[in-house]
Image (cartoon, rainbow, N blue to C red; front, side, top):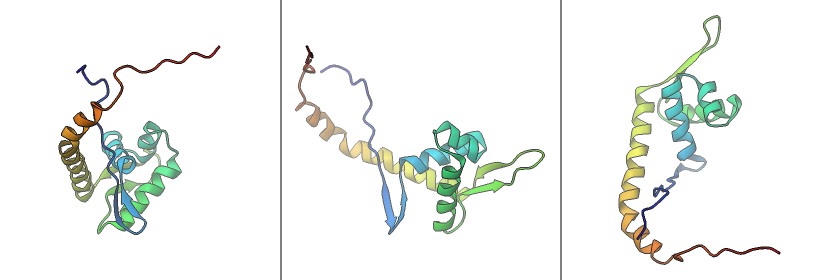
Length: 126
């Protein structure tokens, strides 16, 4: 069987309570905030507006027992943002669950791939 060009990547989305969820988007936002030190930079990196990024952060900060992101207001030196210890724990736990999900489905994905056509059918329009 040829090597896989695209790695298996399950998209885990947890519905924690009614209307409260964490999935790939929020996890990516937390990661980018940790890397960039800024909500606006993180949002730009992910192709979202500052308002959208801030609303996601605000929702996470509200729904967990303590804030996941600590933000400093802008000013002469500009603002900034960091993950709190809880934010780091939430992100780490989410990434751990993704890895567990991947390990759990790998053999099924291999079997599933055997059901796919060997070559993609090519159709031409005249």
